[in-house]
Image 1 (cartoon, rainbow, N blue to C red):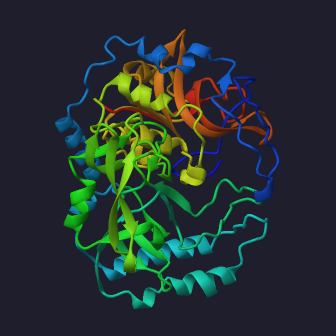
Image 2: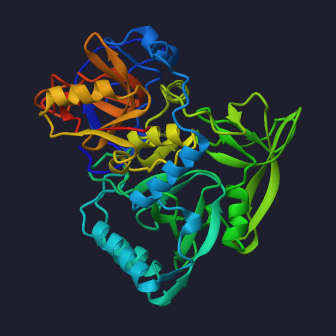
Image 3: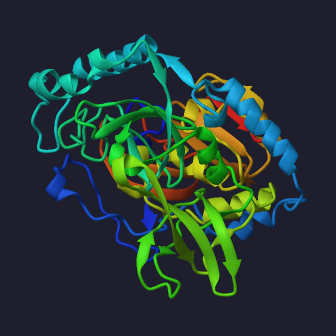
Length: 465
């Protein structure tokens, strides 16, 4: 299994998959970049899942009071402040120190560089990554000798979705030959208008080392636009006038006739609103201008798009509906291919509700009320009791390297919705089926493999309430 906090590669045991308007592709052997198989069309339905269970209303109708407001906007604000205080990686960009000791950032960058350099990794053509790439290209380009003793942070916003990387390079580095969908340098994908603090840039200026609200790493400088001050940045990204994307993604256009597509920001993206009219919404879009400085231009959103000028009420019904909008959406390790891994899925669902959910699964497991911590394959009765005490749509289940959203219990089975890449189908080998999307399943899944079921391997349960 892949060791990375954002998700897991292989989770499930063999289950026959019922055709549901798709062709399912078996992916057992490694493939190189040009041989990447087509995606299974979704949503996939396991034989244990009834067709009606693929609808949000099925799970909402089983709740006693699904529209009860669980947290007011003021309580959501307090929870966000608790998350920033509790989770070290979760940062409020607008409360960060304005200056940073240069040696601290230098040491962090050096540690990340040496850690990756010391690993045996492969490129997407199956060749081992040579040490010369680190010693002659990446290392010198870090330009650490030019880092001053004290750093004054610069402030910027992402002008488009952009990858956050462990090192300033676009070279894929794979743990296994042919493992092209799991780039070990890929941390995550930050969204359009994400505010960041910039600590350092590479010698060639192509990459910036940044702190985003839930991650630190390298992004392409061309994907950032710098503001003159943090207060100017705050004026836009913390404005009370905004659009939040509630659909899986929505189109933004360059023209009011909605003919020329600009971008398609994903669920949870918040965009400063210029004004609303009968013809739709006018929003502010960031553009990288001369010397990397911010330029703002007007863009247009169709009034029929799945957006809102405020966050939805924090109810079980609304959260479940948001989750099911992503059913069948592409899996993407660390946001690769514009997809979502397991914790990327839960992150976007709760982000669209106004919750500053951390990005990493381990961090997500500490948000809210802890209902139980367990050892794998132990505490079965206590684990079941904890699940039954958790609310559908607001309870997260974590196993090592994987995060799931609880939907409820039926006939003694516990059901979840989650994003996964593949399912194991053997007791003795790594043979697996490629799923690569958000699915609904029960927690007995994988029970016939040597790994054990999802229920057996769940190690923590927490309720976001």
